[in-house]
Length: 244
Image (cartoon, rainbow, N blue to C red; front, top):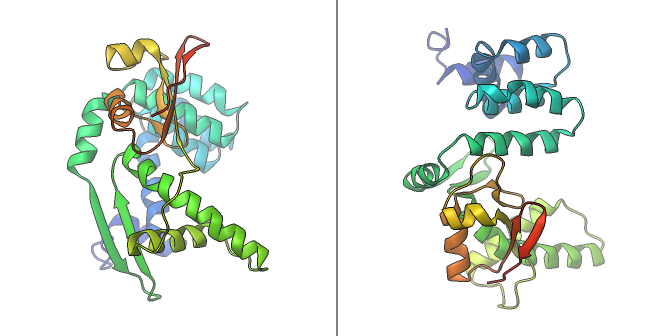
Protein backbone atom coordinates (compact mmCIF):
# COMPACT_ATOMS: atom_id res chain seq x y z
CA UNK A 1 0.00 0.00 0.00
CA UNK A 2 2.74 2.45 0.87
CA UNK A 3 4.50 1.74 -2.43
CA UNK A 4 1.28 2.34 -4.35
CA UNK A 5 0.91 5.64 -2.52
CA UNK A 6 4.39 6.72 -3.53
CA UNK A 7 5.76 6.71 0.04
CA UNK A 8 9.37 5.82 0.87
CA UNK A 9 8.38 3.18 3.44
CA UNK A 10 5.54 1.87 5.58
CA UNK A 11 6.76 4.15 8.37
CA UNK A 12 6.48 7.21 6.11
CA UNK A 13 2.94 6.16 5.17
CA UNK A 14 1.95 5.71 8.83
CA UNK A 15 3.58 9.01 9.84
CA UNK A 16 1.66 10.88 7.15
CA UNK A 17 -1.72 9.35 7.95
CA UNK A 18 -1.38 9.71 11.74
CA UNK A 19 0.42 13.03 11.87
CA UNK A 20 3.43 11.68 13.78
CA UNK A 21 7.14 11.63 13.04
CA UNK A 22 8.74 8.90 10.94
CA UNK A 23 10.75 7.81 13.99
CA UNK A 24 7.59 7.39 16.06
CA UNK A 25 5.93 5.50 13.23
CA UNK A 26 8.89 3.13 12.95
CA UNK A 27 8.73 2.45 16.69
CA UNK A 28 4.98 1.80 16.48
CA UNK A 29 5.38 -0.68 13.63
CA UNK A 30 8.27 -2.46 15.34
CA UNK A 31 6.34 -2.64 18.61
CA UNK A 32 3.37 -4.17 16.81
CA UNK A 33 5.58 -6.78 15.21
CA UNK A 34 7.15 -7.75 18.53
CA UNK A 35 3.79 -7.95 20.31
CA UNK A 36 2.90 -10.93 18.15
CA UNK A 37 5.53 -12.94 20.06
CA UNK A 38 4.77 -11.47 23.50
CA UNK A 39 1.15 -12.34 24.40
CA UNK A 40 1.32 -11.16 28.02
CA UNK A 41 2.54 -7.72 27.01
CA UNK A 42 0.02 -7.57 24.15
CA UNK A 43 -2.78 -8.37 26.58
CA UNK A 44 -1.66 -5.68 29.03
CA UNK A 45 -1.41 -3.13 26.23
CA UNK A 46 -4.91 -3.98 24.94
CA UNK A 47 -6.31 -3.53 28.46
CA UNK A 48 -4.75 -0.08 28.70
CA UNK A 49 -2.37 -1.10 31.48
CA UNK A 50 0.67 0.05 29.49
CA UNK A 51 1.39 3.34 27.77
CA UNK A 52 2.77 3.23 24.22
CA UNK A 53 6.18 4.20 25.63
CA UNK A 54 6.10 1.42 28.23
CA UNK A 55 4.99 -1.09 25.60
CA UNK A 56 7.82 -0.10 23.26
CA UNK A 57 10.43 -0.39 26.02
CA UNK A 58 9.24 -3.79 27.26
CA UNK A 59 8.87 -5.32 23.80
CA UNK A 60 12.32 -4.08 22.80
CA UNK A 61 13.94 -5.85 25.78
CA UNK A 62 11.70 -8.93 25.88
CA UNK A 63 12.29 -9.58 22.18
CA UNK A 64 15.94 -10.18 23.12
CA UNK A 65 15.22 -11.98 26.41
CA UNK A 66 11.64 -13.39 26.43
CA UNK A 67 12.15 -14.81 29.95
CA UNK A 68 12.24 -11.23 31.28
CA UNK A 69 8.75 -10.32 30.02
CA UNK A 70 6.82 -10.98 33.25
CA UNK A 71 9.48 -9.27 35.38
CA UNK A 72 9.38 -6.16 33.22
CA UNK A 73 5.58 -6.11 33.24
CA UNK A 74 5.66 -6.26 37.05
CA UNK A 75 8.20 -3.44 37.13
CA UNK A 76 6.02 -1.26 34.88
CA UNK A 77 3.38 -1.17 37.61
CA UNK A 78 5.64 0.34 40.26
CA UNK A 79 8.45 2.35 38.61
CA UNK A 80 8.63 5.47 36.47
CA UNK A 81 9.01 5.32 32.70
CA UNK A 82 12.65 6.37 33.01
CA UNK A 83 13.37 3.64 35.54
CA UNK A 84 11.58 1.08 33.37
CA UNK A 85 13.64 2.09 30.35
CA UNK A 86 16.84 1.74 32.39
CA UNK A 87 15.80 -1.74 33.53
CA UNK A 88 14.90 -2.71 29.97
CA UNK A 89 18.30 -1.46 28.77
CA UNK A 90 20.08 -3.55 31.41
CA UNK A 91 17.98 -6.59 30.53
CA UNK A 92 18.79 -6.21 26.86
CA UNK A 93 22.49 -5.65 27.59
CA UNK A 94 22.72 -8.78 29.76
CA UNK A 95 21.39 -10.84 26.85
CA UNK A 96 23.65 -9.15 24.31
CA UNK A 97 27.33 -9.56 23.47
CA UNK A 98 28.33 -5.98 24.27
CA UNK A 99 31.76 -6.34 22.70
CA UNK A 100 30.22 -7.50 19.43
CA UNK A 101 27.67 -4.68 19.65
CA UNK A 102 30.46 -2.16 20.17
CA UNK A 103 32.33 -3.42 17.10
CA UNK A 104 29.15 -3.45 15.02
CA UNK A 105 28.20 0.12 15.95
CA UNK A 106 31.77 1.26 15.32
CA UNK A 107 31.68 -0.25 11.84
CA UNK A 108 28.39 1.53 11.13
CA UNK A 109 29.30 4.90 12.63
CA UNK A 110 28.11 7.85 10.56
CA UNK A 111 27.70 11.61 10.47
CA UNK A 112 24.88 12.84 8.26
CA UNK A 113 23.56 16.28 7.42
CA UNK A 114 20.39 17.28 5.59
CA UNK A 115 17.88 20.10 5.22
CA UNK A 116 14.24 19.53 6.09
CA UNK A 117 11.11 20.90 4.42
CA UNK A 118 11.15 23.98 6.65
CA UNK A 119 14.67 24.81 5.51
CA UNK A 120 16.34 23.91 8.81
CA UNK A 121 19.66 22.09 8.70
CA UNK A 122 20.11 18.85 10.65
CA UNK A 123 23.22 17.05 11.86
CA UNK A 124 23.04 13.44 13.07
CA UNK A 125 25.95 11.52 14.57
CA UNK A 126 25.70 7.76 15.15
CA UNK A 127 28.44 6.11 17.22
CA UNK A 128 29.04 4.15 20.41
CA UNK A 129 27.71 5.69 23.66
CA UNK A 130 31.19 6.38 25.01
CA UNK A 131 32.05 8.34 21.85
CA UNK A 132 28.93 10.49 22.18
CA UNK A 133 29.56 10.91 25.91
CA UNK A 134 33.09 12.12 25.18
CA UNK A 135 31.75 14.83 22.89
CA UNK A 136 29.09 15.90 25.37
CA UNK A 137 31.62 16.32 28.20
CA UNK A 138 33.08 19.13 26.12
CA UNK A 139 29.76 20.59 25.00
CA UNK A 140 27.99 20.66 28.37
CA UNK A 141 30.34 22.97 30.35
CA UNK A 142 30.25 25.60 27.60
CA UNK A 143 26.49 25.11 27.18
CA UNK A 144 25.98 25.83 30.88
CA UNK A 145 28.14 28.96 30.73
CA UNK A 146 26.20 30.25 27.73
CA UNK A 147 22.88 29.43 29.39
CA UNK A 148 23.82 31.19 32.65
CA UNK A 149 25.02 34.26 30.74
CA UNK A 150 21.75 34.37 28.80
CA UNK A 151 19.69 34.02 32.00
CA UNK A 152 21.62 36.90 33.57
CA UNK A 153 20.80 39.03 30.53
CA UNK A 154 17.12 38.10 30.71
CA UNK A 155 17.14 35.78 27.69
CA UNK A 156 15.43 32.43 28.05
CA UNK A 157 15.77 29.68 25.48
CA UNK A 158 15.83 25.89 25.95
CA UNK A 159 19.15 24.30 27.03
CA UNK A 160 19.29 22.51 23.68
CA UNK A 161 19.63 25.87 21.94
CA UNK A 162 22.73 26.73 23.97
CA UNK A 163 24.11 23.21 23.42
CA UNK A 164 23.91 23.92 19.68
CA UNK A 165 25.70 27.26 20.22
CA UNK A 166 28.37 25.50 22.29
CA UNK A 167 29.01 22.94 19.55
CA UNK A 168 29.31 25.71 16.99
CA UNK A 169 31.91 27.46 19.14
CA UNK A 170 33.89 24.29 19.80
CA UNK A 171 33.98 23.23 16.16
CA UNK A 172 34.81 26.78 15.11
CA UNK A 173 37.64 27.00 17.61
CA UNK A 174 36.08 29.96 19.39
CA UNK A 175 35.68 28.26 22.78
CA UNK A 176 38.48 29.03 25.21
CA UNK A 177 40.27 26.13 26.85
CA UNK A 178 39.70 25.49 30.51
CA UNK A 179 39.04 22.87 33.12
CA UNK A 180 36.31 20.42 32.24
CA UNK A 181 33.58 20.74 34.86
CA UNK A 182 31.51 17.85 33.57
CA UNK A 183 32.89 14.35 33.91
CA UNK A 184 31.80 10.97 32.71
CA UNK A 185 30.40 8.78 35.47
CA UNK A 186 30.73 5.02 35.07
CA UNK A 187 29.65 2.15 37.31
CA UNK A 188 31.07 -1.32 36.90
CA UNK A 189 31.16 -4.47 38.98
CA UNK A 190 34.71 -5.49 39.87
CA UNK A 191 34.13 -9.05 38.67
CA UNK A 192 32.92 -7.80 35.26
CA UNK A 193 35.89 -5.45 34.96
CA UNK A 194 38.36 -8.26 35.71
CA UNK A 195 36.58 -10.83 33.54
CA UNK A 196 36.08 -8.50 30.59
CA UNK A 197 32.29 -8.78 30.34
CA UNK A 198 29.27 -8.71 32.70
CA UNK A 199 27.07 -11.72 33.51
CA UNK A 200 23.72 -12.08 35.25
CA UNK A 201 22.91 -8.82 37.07
CA UNK A 202 26.42 -7.33 36.89
CA UNK A 203 26.68 -3.77 35.67
CA UNK A 204 28.97 -1.89 33.30
CA UNK A 205 27.38 1.39 32.24
CA UNK A 206 27.88 5.11 31.70
CA UNK A 207 25.47 7.31 33.62
CA UNK A 208 22.95 8.76 31.18
CA UNK A 209 24.08 6.52 28.31
CA UNK A 210 23.27 2.99 29.52
CA UNK A 211 25.25 -0.26 29.32
CA UNK A 212 28.57 -0.28 27.48
CA UNK A 213 31.19 -2.90 26.72
CA UNK A 214 33.86 -3.39 29.38
CA UNK A 215 36.48 -2.67 26.72
CA UNK A 216 34.93 0.77 26.20
CA UNK A 217 35.33 1.59 29.89
CA UNK A 218 38.89 0.26 29.90
CA UNK A 219 39.74 2.44 26.89
CA UNK A 220 38.37 5.53 28.63
CA UNK A 221 40.35 4.79 31.80
CA UNK A 222 43.58 4.21 29.87
CA UNK A 223 43.36 7.34 27.72
CA UNK A 224 42.32 9.67 30.56
CA UNK A 225 40.38 11.68 27.99
CA UNK A 226 37.68 12.70 28.71
CA UNK A 227 37.70 13.08 32.50
CA UNK A 228 36.21 9.94 34.01
CA UNK A 229 35.00 8.88 37.44
CA UNK A 230 34.56 5.09 37.53
CA UNK A 231 32.81 3.62 40.54
CA UNK A 232 33.93 0.00 40.91
CA UNK A 233 31.68 -2.10 43.13
CA UNK A 234 31.57 -5.57 44.59
CA UNK A 235 27.95 -6.25 45.35
CA UNK A 236 26.72 -3.17 47.19
CA UNK A 237 30.20 -2.25 48.43
CA UNK A 238 32.16 0.48 46.66
CA UNK A 239 35.69 -0.86 46.15
CA UNK A 240 37.36 2.11 44.48
CA UNK A 241 36.51 5.25 42.53
CA UNK A 242 39.50 5.89 40.24
CA UNK A 243 39.64 9.09 38.25
CA UNK A 244 41.45 9.46 34.96
